[in-house]
Length: 617
Image (cartoon, rainbow, N blue to C red; front, side, top):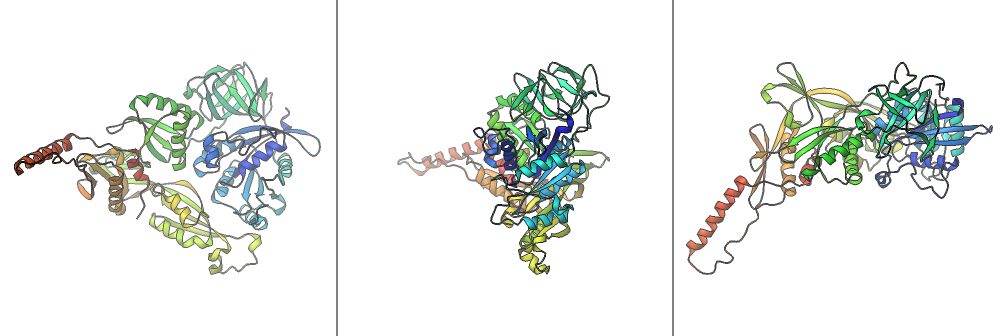
């Protein structure tokens, strides 16, 4: 197809602003999916996505569309997730498009992720199409939200489109606006092939199936292709497009979005960001690809059955092919055996990966509590990166410990400013600035500060906060204190030195590395006390007393004891003098002492998750 008649675009939005529903209407109105096949959240194929109502993986689909002038176009939509943990998926989609539809809920207005994704699109030099969705809701305020878009992004009022994805109102106008406003691809089919891999999956019959956007050139079935970063040669076993299911084609040309089945079996040979070219006519240089993101949260994953270690590693390798932000390396634990230390972009990302491993690969896994990566400056001027407390060097060799900090943006109604500031102060947050977002629909209202705090406008708060503080139920606390109205976005903002100490947990006089924490010195006592109490509830009772101790170095700062199960050895002792009873009790006492020396304490999964549920004091 002529590139002039191709439009590549994506949809960006905050969670629950109607992005997936709008994609459903596009599929319906372009005739890509018949009414018999249609179902809600059509592009969200994973059961996990449907259950949680969120998009986890980006999807691609090619749709035919006839414009008002009778010209036929091919619209290539690359769907994107909305949660901050999956911003890497969004950046990959943006790199493969020329335009983006910015969807904003008419009842909720601009949210934190709306801002973040919009700035990503602007950095990628994409054309933005602002769409105000859900205008049919009784509480909708489209004029006010339009004023917010004008104020924050500088859109002119006639650029903004109004729609209701639920009933299809305004969807035709959006499709026409895509044709009119989004520029066509610039590459030509007669140039050497350069195809950017923006996603990939593993198929047991076709090997690695790469999802590609062709920027230049063309590729046909059975062509010999070259992977430019690894110089690996292979054959294009099959090429095609998504309509929305994979449909074979004889060839793909510049500007199109589709897939190439490579036949490669080693998942490390074709990574996201790879550039394909033809072996016989090679391009001079690859596409820029993607900047690999550094994981922000780390957790150890161990098989519940030690025999399943290889199955767990193979599953993570296949999952990494479909999730380029996931990293892992081997790890060994005295308590849990062989496992893998995994890096994630956030807590939701970690939760999704665990659930996918259990559902898609049938694995029963144990996950240690999440932690962050610290930079330890040694006395010999070297710098060591520590992503688990067990790797922390001895105190005498440490000059300072630096922890990662976040730049946080919170959007909230004015009513909840006090509750949010109180929460941020408890989490070592540092206030940066505050801005009122006032839409046109409420400009006639008073601008008195007291009126605005009563909920007349929405506020954007900017803070800086340690990443470690976010792991301890921060998001749940934010939602509960604002009744679900606040939205959050964050980016890494460098490292800072702080008075950090290692908090060890001892069970039956033995340190358990998997339960250790690196915490702020001022919060160590509260963390240790709370963790000891939670572990006392989580650890099942043994035949001997189990002391739980929280320690900093050699100093014990908190202690709890799991009471032993007691067998009544005197139950069958009928008659006889007191020496017989004393003999039985002394024998039991000696047995318990011996058991305490050699007995092992079994740690259930709840013990590790107790760290995740710690409340900041």
